[in-house]
Image (tube, rainbow, N blue to C red; front, side, top):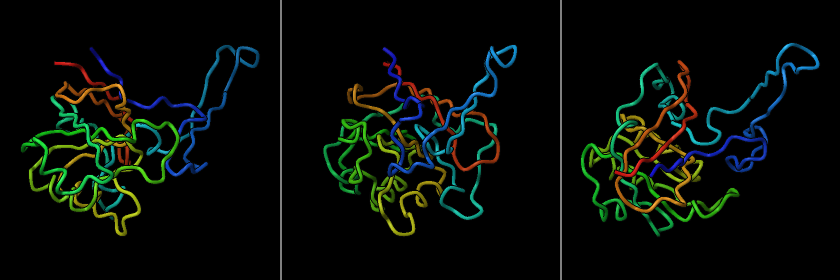
Length: 203
């Protein structure tokens, strides 16, 4: 079975903190009445919907996207169903996470379609624990991996250690377990984030 865990892009979709500037804008460049073809245009933040963060997002002079798919975006992923309100070091250390893993955290975030200002997030200590284990990547069912943390320690700890971050996953229908991850970010060079289509295939 294949689960599509990507957000659908549309004008009324949920965006981070309900900020209007993050909502995608659809327009029409030409129609069959004004030209020979119908051609649409979309304008949106690279951090809208399901997306992959790159170091420049939170680290000055950090690395940007290139033409390669980050290591771990194609391969096994462990989905953990977490009931805690914060994913800290204690939560991380209680789970079967091994070096080289890619991990997705399914939380109560997946139960809501509107933006929850009290969403479950990965704390600084949780990020440090994930770094110490040596994972390849982490995904969360929220539009941010951290919430109101001064200096953004979670992002910085993960991104500065080569750990990719996927935000905006939709995991409501996905049972806990191990899957084949197919994460295909758009092929855009030199930016701080890439929208992605993310699929999970049962093994």
